[in-house]
Length: 497
Ligand SMILES: Cc1ncc(COP(=O)(O)O)c(C=O)c1O
Image (cartoon, rainbow, N blue to C red; front, side):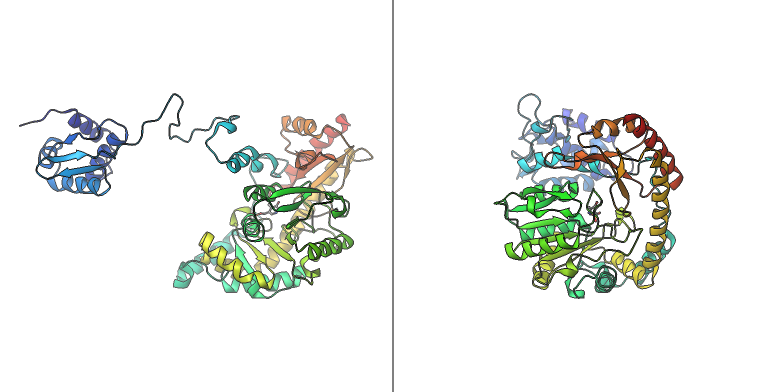
């Protein structure tokens, strides 16, 4: 006899709404499952027999049978011999409790971070929002320009790797990365950065953020102190926060981080440095300072994390040698990346770790990450081996030197005693220093109102800001647009000072 239950109505409606591309058993499965999870089919409800359901919905009995089997296996339904099929008692999702309970939609109300159901660490990270607030963007905004990157060559190398389809390149990346890439990196950093170490010490990662995360996890425990430069690279700070390390800001002066200003009792476990081009001030660390930090690390048995993020981009004089190359005590982990010089989304970086750390780092990388992307690593190895990397570096170095020169020319009318460029001629941004305590945040806001995107130097400080200025990005941007925005910025500076 025909059973006109609400179950049929519900299921018919589900069929009417269903995407016509979905197989019919999938529509029936979803309709029953959603009705149970949504409390429309309650635990204990008896479902019509498979024969009746098939007839009512115009489905084959096999379709209904296989749907029921799936739902029985997943615990949404239970079968009682001789009595039929029922909604299982444990199947329904718990009902949300109280008004305003989580809807499951992942809704986030801006400005209400403290009310989110996050861990203490999660709350700190959600508050931080570093990328959007601190990332140095080209001052002219709009579309970024990556036309310098030889995309055709890169495509050919990647396709070649995929065409060869070597099985070992489709596996996880063990042993710290693809050997030919590690070899190419070892040769490159030895020659161009005076880094000491052999191919075994090179570990390929998914970029510097990833390298820093591994270092923080393997070399420090919760609550250990990490000295960071003040002002500091926000990305590193964020990683250290996420590993529950105690961040100790140490002042940067014209020679780089000055350990003499660190709090007396502070004994660091990690010291994070950007010695070739301090981020964001653009100051290189002097040799005397490098020596004193190395001595301190040896004395305290601390690890130095040397973030050498953009050393290829130096526009006057020879590239500075790495700090790691001066280290005779194996206290430095050297971190490099292809993000700046190739393109940010490539997400390939590397570490050169002291020999005793090779095995622990390799195995932690494998266990924590299950790294892969060996075909991309293969393409990059070839890109370096064939000399394309070296010519690309020459090309970008020249192009960025020209863009920087155009920007400096455009800013010239505003420069003088009250505003001066304090960063070295390197990297993808420059720093205009302003008189101490000048309200650089207001100036950055006025620039933004005119479509010129600059960051206030004072915002990068962890402690009280001891300098005021503007951080002005010119990377990945067409030079004529950079020059135009530079002129607008110069006018703004002149009227503000
Ligand atoms: C100081 C510093 N280190 C490292 C990086 C690069 O990080 P990643 O390799 O994770 O892209 C950046 C990028 O902005 C940076 O500014």
